[in-house]
Amino acid sequence: MQEIFFLARHTPFWSVPLIIIGAEFAYLFWLRKKKATVVVCLIFTLIGLVCTGFYVWAGGPEKSVKIVKKIYIEHFLNQPSL
Image (cartoon, rainbow, N blue to C red):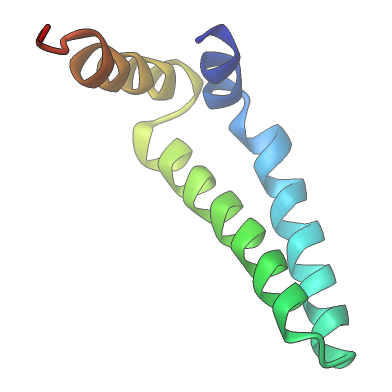
């Protein structure tokens, strides 16, 4: 879980380059008419946009980690035993 908390805390350092690179390659492959590759690049761009939006909505590095921890505890640690 430490890796997930690290990614949540430092979201702008990996998501903004992901957005830029994904959008640029999507445009290049769109010019070459390779639709499947364009879709893959746009999916990466969308992942970066969603993660950046979550980071901004959460309020920064400390609050985003708190929200991720809360989601983890509520949904993965409180599972009823069979």
